[in-house]
Amino acid sequence: MESSTEIERSAAAWLARRGATGWSERDEAELAAWLVSTAHRVAWLRLQAAWEQSDRLRALAAGVSPGRVPARGSWNHSRFFRRTGDEVASEGASAGERRNGSRRAIDESRGHLRRWVAAAAALLLVSGALWFQVLRVHATAEMSYATAVGELRTVQLADGSRATLSSDSELGVTLTRSERHIALRRGEAFFDVAKDADRPFVVQSGKRCVVAVGTHFAVRADGEALRIIVVEGRVRLTTTPPETSAPALLSAGMVTVADVGGVSTRSYPLDRAEEMLSWRTGLLSFRATPLAEAAAEFNRYTAHKLVIDDPAVGAIPISGNFRWSNTDAFVRLVEQGFALHADRRGDDIVLRAARPQR
Amino acid sequence: MQYGRRMTEPLDRWFIQEIVPHEAALMRYLRRAWSHADEIHDLRQEVYVRVYEAAKKARPHSAKSFLFATARNLLADRMRRQRVVSIESVGDWDALNVPLDEISPERSLGGRQDLKRLTDAFDILPERCREVLWLRRVEDLPQRDVAARLGIGEKTVEKQLAKGVRIIADLLFGDGETKRDTRAQREHEHGKQHRD
Image (cartoon, rainbow over the protein chains, first blue to last red):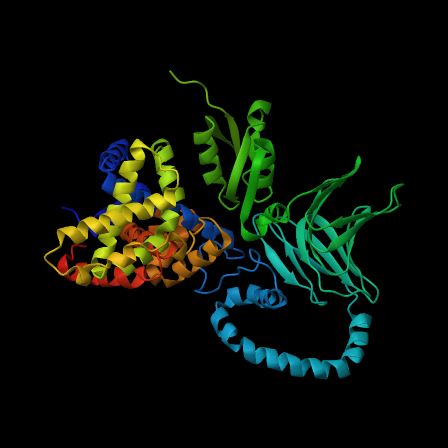
């Protein structure tokens, strides 16, 4: 009789073989035959569940460049857990650490670091006022940051804030005495704003400004339209010249779209709002999103644009998390799942209903 | 790939969602009641088979109670069969009747703590295994491309994936002791049948 370990080993081998080149109908039939035995089936189901679960690692692939395997222990769970002051502080370090792959060393030295920070803070209290004046006077030149299609980039600003630029985005940053001014020229950026009540953090796009003091939010420019998602604290949306309505105050969980027609806001549970910003971790998250909209999302990240001419196809609701760097996988999935057919047209991929065969 | 249809049978989903999350508790229970550590893996498998077979006929109301009742019956059967050996040395009749509440609650699959356990599991994988799994599951590369990227054969990729998924399953579902068990088991088998 097969031992349970032998069965488990076979199940694992099937699971791995199934994804290999040359997996055929016949293999599929063989696997089906193998799975008729309950002993085989339960072992398979258990491993299958682990296999399915393992793709949740994608959620943590934040900022890892394709083709690179992150260092052990270099995970940033804080986005998924309750934030504590420590976590937010360490997160700042982790973006850089991940690049160096030296997270563990930094973890160990963090205790040390804290003591040093305390000592340094005392010193800063003395010299801080002086430095502050110097910074205010000198840091007025605009710094420009841009990303190419398919690129993400997190930049540390001189005031301690951080901006994560999505694909194909551009920011102009000017830090002055009275204001931290960010011009969003193109695309989308997520801001983690350092608290400074004296110097509002203003993200401007066209005639609209999003004003924050210290909070987390994202702003996307889509032609005339602006989309603002707040995941922590509050921001104020203003327009120049001022519209008749009072400036809108947007708080965590709110998703606001401002276009020529006006401003509309919807409140979501916070985790859903965060999900809409999962592009920062390399994912696009859809919930019954029309295929046309999902395709438009993908198109922000790739040079090979998805094109849908048929409105019936565009209306198909799509749910799930997808890696934006892998349009092909998405295309394969919708082809199989919704009887669609993908054609190449130059650089573009055209999705249309598959002609009924036979 | 078209394996989707067969893999989404309601019974299979029920098994994954209602039974597998209790694995850590089940393992603790088995360990408490059965003294031969090397038989735990086998017992777990046998419990799963019995539960699945029974659920084919009728789905139990409480998956958890049913799972532990099945485990208890199985152990009782085995103890009776092994009567030649002193009962005390094999199993513990009292431990069979542990109230369910004493065994910690099930694990939620897909929960946030789960993500932490997943990364922990991923981090203890051997280096090659870890690389292969990352490229395959996270980067979503076809296995052929994973092989090319790492300059190894596709067969090696397969072997590493098979190895990785077993380790991950143990750490994700098991009770933390499994790591030691499987290592012992693996070493044991490695000597017995080194066929790679």
